[in-house]
Image 1 (cartoon, protein in one colour):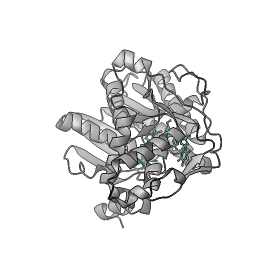
Image 2 (tube, protein in one colour; image 1 turned 90 degrees about the vertical axis):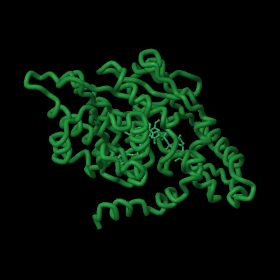
Image 3 (cartoon, helix red, strand yellow; image 1 turned 180 degrees about the vertical axis):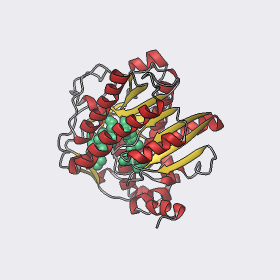
Image 4 (cartoon, helix red, strand yellow; image 1 turned 90 degrees about the horizontal axis):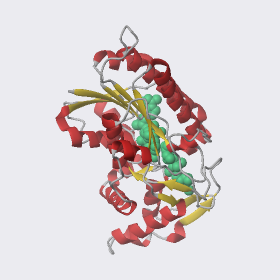
Length: 360
Ligand code: NAD
Ligand code: DAU
């Protein structure tokens, strides 16, 4: 049975990936989820799988060498899928240091521990061991409105402390591949949306605020463009890269779904109106009047757009969920998980861990 070490599996994409993997492989795999449970980690995201006997949760910081070495020493890890990171650009502008700590140093610890566990005396690596580093399109910087795409060959030009720290972590992975022939891949993905996304990010924030009749903050002129991908398509891409990708390669992952932020907000408002029943009191709250232009994000990248040509040609991956369906599924998920949203916005979800593991 293949054993996966997933870091950051209690976060948005990590938890969707774990759900995807158990749905696909069921009892054929084992997953060990290592997560420090920062504000972004939420064990409620994994409630329905926590009792599986092929799933283990380990609360640990990826910067903690001893803890991570122990996980490798106690388990024969075949695959690492490294999601754990500080992920929110606005937070990185306010508190850059923690981004350097987790994203750069934490990745160095993950690489070192995997290398130590997998390396043979002659400097080669045990067969069939793979490390996948989950990264972002933001490392490539910003595109102009007139066109152009991010390719795997596009030079790195990060602007925010978040993207600079992710670029640093990518460079470390590349250095390990070049120097030691360390068996790894990097994926650089565009903006994800879907279930379990923390409501500090644009799409869940707009859904949550609109349903409560709160203001919908639009940074700058609202015309910044992002390339949106349904999170399950990202999970599938990661699995396909580990199964079919060429080692040492980078693959860009994107939805060919570019939209201005203001367009996204209008789509969400229209979809909420369409999906809410007439007798739901929230229907009257959802209104374009809530749209509020606010001060722009510092160093705000204008446009991101991924060219997913390589992953399509080499691996056969393509997004399956179009934005119209994906946003409906996402809104339906938020309707069905009001309690989750309430717990997250009130901070109660952190008590779930304390109750479950009696840590208080
Ligand atoms: P998230 O913020 O929702 O989750 C991050 C997870 O990592 C949380 O569970 C958190 O507790 C954990 N974590 C943070 N610091 C840790 C540490 N020091 N040790 C152990 N665990 C720690 O993030 P996300 O949106 O799910 O993103 C996951 C990964 O995917 C990140 O590496 C991010 O850069 C990348 N990515 C995200 C997107 C996106 O649109 N969200 C797009 C492309 C790439
Ligand atoms: O491109 C991939 C990246 O996408 C990931 O690497 C990051 O982890 C993820 O957070 C995301 O970064 P963005 O900065 O693009 O996502 P965010 O949801 O924060 O913002 C999307 C766009 O919406 C961006 O142009 C800023 C704008 N925005 C955001 C918020 C939270 C607003 O106009 N108002 C808001 O309140």
